[in-house]
Length: 193
Image (cartoon, rainbow, N blue to C red; front, side, top):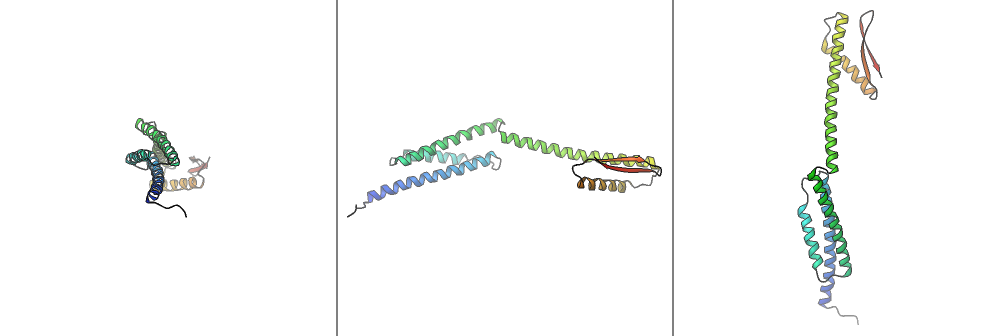
């Protein structure tokens, strides 16, 4: 007959399986914590997962102290401990860079925000310059035509609508609006550059 299964053998076999399952769970927890840390470093999460790191560290030490481990268990635990310590060094270094303000992602975000603010300011200043130039054209047109009854708002609206239509149809070209004195009166000339 075959060998008799004793309760002692079942307990020992199941204990080894439990150790292996614990190692797999610890690996999954480490991966989850790594993702949470990366979310924090990319500013998508508000706090660093300190509690998760403490739990992993504590559980790793508990598993390393278990007496009934096989060589395979010890190998997996050493690999897991090495990976954990590498990640912990990276996390500590990155947290220190964030505190000092030298972390490259933070710098990139700040640079992007500064450029966006500058772009918005430039956009507003370009619109202001355009309106100022159009008003200058209106006043110069009044001087040349001696027509004081010209409605300023409709004149500017028509000129601005023409400018925007040309700008939308030719976004890569510059538009020059000039006032030309003709025999029958002043004319507005629009050129694409």
